[in-house]
Image (cartoon, rainbow over all chains, first blue to last red; front, side):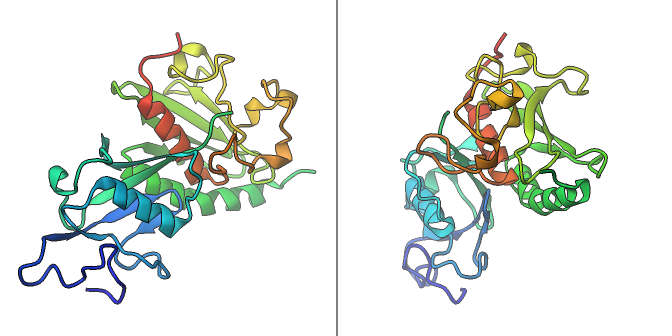
Length: 108
Length: 152
């Protein structure tokens, strides 16, 4: 476990009988989100597998300051688009998996 | 006002590292093998939702003072800017109609007389400001991925 609080706030859940927790990485156009990058992140990509994709998108946006509501944010695993309403468990996201946050600007 | 080629090259290389990391994670193919002071260009390969391949060239003369010229090209770069090289859904000029594309400005023959090149980092509409090469790649990735077919 790192020195930071996990996004879920259940840092001890991976031990004992708590919900299964998975940690992964998210590449964004502003850098990588991981257990130790960026250094000053207040959240880390470590979640119970019951969490929905939309929560991950919300958290990675807050870490990297993607605050614009009119932009389109999509989480992908390689070429696969992850549905915001589905859970991490439904995609069998494993520890260390690299995801991508796609950011689309507004239209002219 | 102009930007020396070595200054542009340094800026491009600095930003290209982040763009390359994004491209690798998103299964895009980035080619910058011939990037140099005499050739401030790199190429990206994208896929649309049907798996069709599209190639874009970023020509970055005078970057970062001015945005790159971003254009759809054939794989061997012998053909540029024709409608059949564009995905569906883009401006039918044809043009990647975003502030980060020099071609979109009226002073460069594009549709936007209401934009100034020096303001290229401003957002389009109410969306995020596309102010880095990595964000340009991500914006194109998102738009091409959602498209199907070609403009013609």
